[in-house]
Length: 262
Image 1: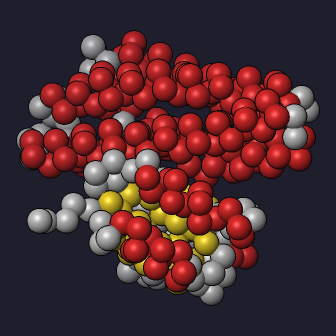
Image 2 (image 1 turned 90 degrees about the vertical axis):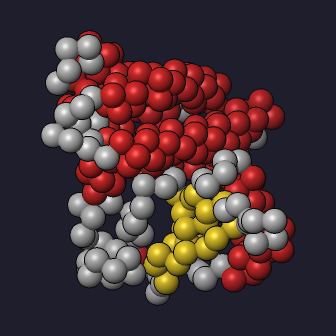
């Protein structure tokens, strides 16, 4: 099967960029949790632990499961990729076990330790995917990484046809009980459970961490017009906003860093 090498190169870059965004988001959550544990504030520890767990269950774990279904089978089908994928799957199981440990612990120090361990495993895991798995698939003449990435998008997006409320143009039904549908493979920043006074700072910090052309999806409990105005003023037209879901219970806006021609 022939494939478009330019499309595969773009797909490879998209995977690496997405991995960078996931790593940055995880670092932010883990830093918040560890800092709270060091300061001894139990309420803040469990607040940041719960925020981290929410992100893990809505972002990192779905990403891992999508890889297992969309990318890993193609890599494992190649003789040079079989043992590599076996190791990657073992690391997924380690990540899942650390998530469970983080959920079950009642000690702040143990929560911080589990979070740090998870961050270390995930960092090593992403390096292998970027440096070994992705190049293997790009070099495979009978595999299209671009097509595989489309399949991964469908898996993360709940099949690509469900739960978007029609805001992405697919005609899907609205999600029940105000839960946001996953409308892109970009990492999501859900600020609905954050205190109102912390939301702008968290979003701006996440945007600062975005690489060139990087994007995230902001999930908010209302139309964040003041925040968007602040973003526009701060980044001087270098952020593009795309509305994915416009209420009535949840608002999702894709924010992408763009290069402005001079």
